[in-house]
Each structure stands twice: as C-alpha cells, then as structure tokens.
Image (cartoon, rainbow, N blue to C red; front, side, top):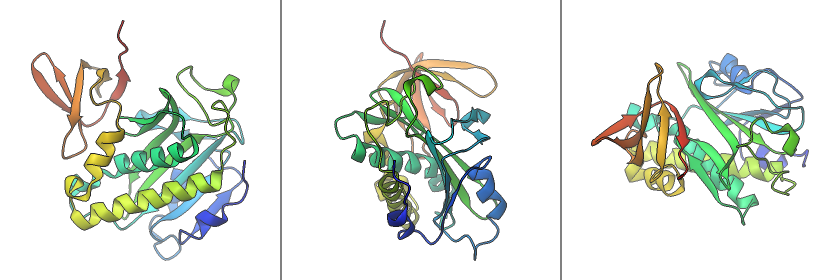
Length: 256
C-alpha cells in the first residue's frame, strides 16, 4: 500500500492527507465557503475515517488503514440543474474506471446510482452532497480490508481480490476521470451530448436487471431496470408502467 500521493498532488490545486477524521465530507463542507484556500478539485483524504456516512444516512466506518476515504470539492459546475444531477453518477463512472485499471481481470461495474462492484461485490460507495457554493463528492474504497473485516458478505476489497493497490494511482486516475467527465458535462450542460449518459449506461450493471427498490417512505418497487433517463434517474418497468426512481436502495434480484 503506497503512502505517497505525489502524482495525485500534481494533478489538483490542493491535496490534504490527514491521519484520522470523523468524515472527510464534513471537513470539506466546513471549508466550502473558502474558495481561495479550497479551490475547485481540492481533495481531502484519510485512511482512518471514524464517523463516515453513506447513502440513505447509513454509517460508514472501517478499521484504520483498511480503506481510503476521499472527498473532492467541486466548484465548476454545470449551469443546468438536470445536468448537476449527473455528478454522483459521473463520480461512480470515474471510480469504476480507476478500479478497473488496477483489476483488469475482474468485472468492474456500477450498481445504480454509483456503487462500484467487483465481480458482483461492492468495493466502493459514493456520496455527493451539495452546499450553497459547491458539491462535495465523497468515496469510500475498500483497500487493505481482509475478508474477516468486510462489513457484509456482499462486499470486497483490493486485498480480498489479491491486489496490493497503488493508492496514489487509484486517486490520480479517479480524480482525472472525474474532472474529465465534469468538464464535458459543464461544457455541454447535457449528459447525452457530453457522452456521460452513454459512459454511465455502458458501465451500469443495473440496467437490464430485475430489481427490488426500497423507496423513501418505505414503499417497495419490484420490476426490471430498463434504462437511465436524462436526469440520471433509474427507469424501472413494473406492471406495465415505467417508474423514474431518483432515490432508493436498489437490490439486484438474482434468478431463482
């Protein structure tokens, strides 16, 4: 496991590595109004996050040194609100590309909206949070986590995959891909014209799957994911109707 982030530091205006923190997203959120000190594409990371939060307010923690928590501050955003909705999906696509580069023999895909799966098991989760002046994208990547440390049977890590991850290259590749996707998205103000819609759809294993979606409010939607719409919502066909899902916990339903 590399302790040097020199290649990543050369790519971004500011990179801070802290020994431990409660939440890298929360730390960046406290500094989001200081654009001079924390410009666009600033990065804060740690190998020991003690109070992280995942999607749907789930708690995300890992043993010290077993995972990498990375938060990126984004200020150069698309003007269109619909285009901004693609930022979390862009982060998922970027991380999937970075993970795949180090696991070339594995199947690296996305579970909508932005969980990164390796051979069907989750290696990374992503949470994007908006502030009045920026968007903060946090990613938690299982790096050196052993099989006994995995939080659930459906998780994996680079170590479990038999790989000693190059953390600097993983970060550099992720931030570079994220920056590229967002530049194209901001220039076009449209996910289709920028190519992001196609990139996410090509990587997203949820499309075409039978799914069970736990929706906000407690209701359940079961059907087949048939696509992703222009706003980044998952389209689920169920009982003759196509539903656009903007938020929910998606489970891929395996055939009996």
